[in-house]
Length: 443
Image (cartoon, rainbow, N blue to C red):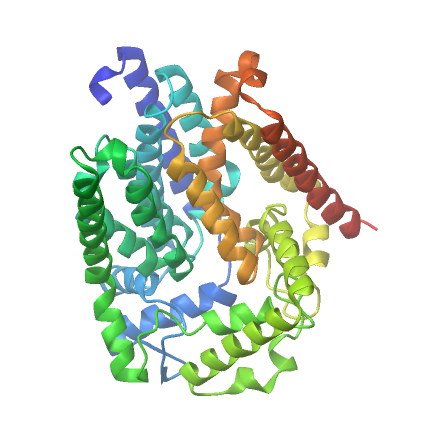
């Protein structure tokens, strides 16, 4: 694929990737912030692994969060030290590698010129650069998610079903909320079996089953040690015991769609020390509420999607001083320099709106492109949303944005009434979300 690049294209690719790495390294030394929330938990879990040989939080063995990212951090802490700078520098390399894989993905869709344009946007996308400087799962997950997407775009990708399963398993091991997407691969094989597999009808079905099984073996090979560990420790084959309270937090009478003030103080079940018992009870409550109040559950689900696609507030707040409970996150966000807010948010707004229309005019190689977006939105619809979670979607909307740029003059020819309706409704939803957010913030 790289051999097909022109001499000038190779030079531009090298310059973009080198620039992306340099910017991330510079930011690693410039940006500094105290750990908080999820970052603090990952940090403590990693230190427990590195220096005590246990996966524990606040002195207690836990399965609260899946172990992939803490294990990654623990390796850095063990061999390089616990200062954030070491994590940032390694993640700068990883994130630059993600940019390179993203370029290979772009070449599956676009010409050299537009692939380099897409890479330039993605490599210097403000929030992407900032997330590489965090103690969060985003940079590591993004690398494996992009590697996975690239493999799925290869010709006859089913030949790599086992490898695909391994990488998919690693991605889940870093971010358990990615687990529901595992169904997409078998679905793809069965839907596309006529195109993928030759022979008689029964032979196509048999191959779809075989490659699906091979894929699932790969996934389970990665996850089984963790699942067995949790069965031994907690008598449950659980990926993470946070699922229940994230489901309940987004599916209860007071749910707003995201984490709300004093949510943990509002329910004594949050203090239950038996993680599995707590997890199951929260799931039970959440399902009972959803069944008894389907209209409210659905309405809250759309609120979650609004939070999912809200502005890049979380990545900006990450680099502010911890205000404790003296100020709300909205008050802190409002106090930021408007120039910083604009620099980070305007590119995001453009990519999401342009990407939406660009995705709608796609007419090839788009199963996993669309499926991953829909799968992630459905997952968020059921659990709880944060603006940080749309990081997963940025590469796909960037692909859509480049597709719109490349086909701008003929875009309307690929839009039927249904796609027009989706595009207009989606655009209004996004504009409405952002307008409401900033209106409420400044009034």
